[in-house]
Length: 220
Image (cartoon, rainbow, N blue to C red; front, side):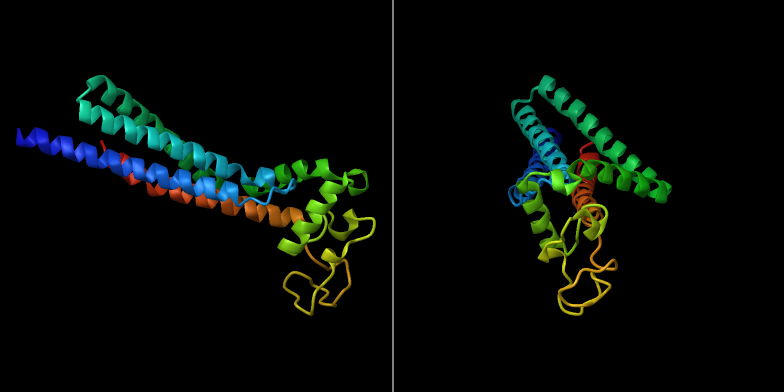
C-alpha cells in the first residue's frame, strides 16, 4: 500500500511539474507573440514563437492527462499519456538532431538560411513598386535595427530616407562614420539583421524546450 501511494504521489507530482513547464513555455510564447511589432518584413522571423506555443500547449495537455489518469487510476488515460509523452520526447530528439546536424554542417546551413531569408525578402523589392505600408515598415525597421535597405543596402531606395543616415560618428553599424550621410560603407542591409533576429528566436525556443527534456525522461 505504501509503495502504491508513493508511486501515485510521485506520478502526480511529475505531471504537475510537466503541466507547469508547459504553462511557462506557452506563456512565454504568448508574451513574445503579443510583443511583436507587426512589421510585415519580420513576421516570418517569428515562426519559432508559434512553435513554442504549440510545444507548450502539448506539454500542458500531457500534464493534465497524466494528473487526471493518476487521480482516476485510469490505465487507458495513463497509456495515452505515456504514448504522447514518448511522441513529444521523439519530437524534441528530432529537433535536437536537426540542430546538431545544422551545427556540424555550419557554413552550409548558414548559407541555406541566408538564401531562404533573402528569397522571402525579395518579394518586397523593388521598393518603388511596394505600397506605402511596406515602406513605412522598412523605415521603422531601419530605425530600430540600425540597418538600411532590404538586400542591397541604400541602393534599394530611390532616395534613402533619414533612417538610413549615419548618426554621430559611431562606426559600429555605419562604417563611414559621417553624420547625416549615406555612403556605400554605411549601415548593413536589414536582411542580415532579420537573420540575426530569427536565430535569436530559435535559440529561445530550443533552450526552453530542451530545459524540460530531463523532466520528460525522468517520468520514465
